[in-house]
Image (cartoon, rainbow, N blue to C red):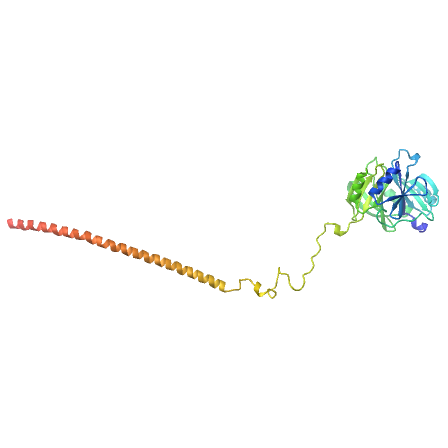
Length: 366
């Protein structure tokens, strides 16, 4: 890689902490790293697979009182020239340019708002950048008191350009910055006056929820997340047990992992057709419904006629029985009336007979 290709690239990440042994035990539990000794005394290498992704060292004695931090190294073809340019733009030199034997040259600066970063020009063997993947640093975020001012500063120094901005409401605009048209990080307002401007580095992981659980179990503190951000990634922010801030980023989850709509059902085969909606031609003769058969209605009609005939016969029988009974009743009553009349006639005849002699006697006496 030529020095011209490294301008504005995030090349190295270094944890300065108060307890290197504790940090070396903590991070591999949260992100897919392992440690490896280096050729420099007191310096440990962070490994992601076979790639070197960063370093670990004790905080310098002159930084007493400063909390542990991750220091980012940004590439430049010429550390000294870039440091001078940065000072003209308002930056402050924290550590003057110096050489790292067989590695490269670096300098530590503070930008105009106070965020610390390092310039780096790698040597012949110190500029390899690992390919994207699990365990590799994937995003970089600057919290600052002046987003627009920071964008101008870093744009002039490293050629970064302004990308898309996301309105975060009360938090302000989250400003994306790009390198040659590719998004590489974001800038946002610091949250609260007590929070100093700083850089935050994200490590790619396969599962942000698992990283959260591991960090909590190992003594870390969750600051935010896991939460999905624009673009589909999932992030979570932490504080390690010694107080160093870092974050993880899970790539967008595949569509299959989301509760999406069910996949379309396969088209039915042309033959045989589904039984749920058969056509008339496809129905077997035995499966035809009983509706077309005419005997059923005739049978019902016959039954109905038979019931009607039976009801008629029953009614006729009742009627005939009633007439017969009435006739008998009438026949039984007539003789009784005749008997009643005969005695009445005889009585009248006898009375008449009794009267008739008296009359004849009366006539005789006259």
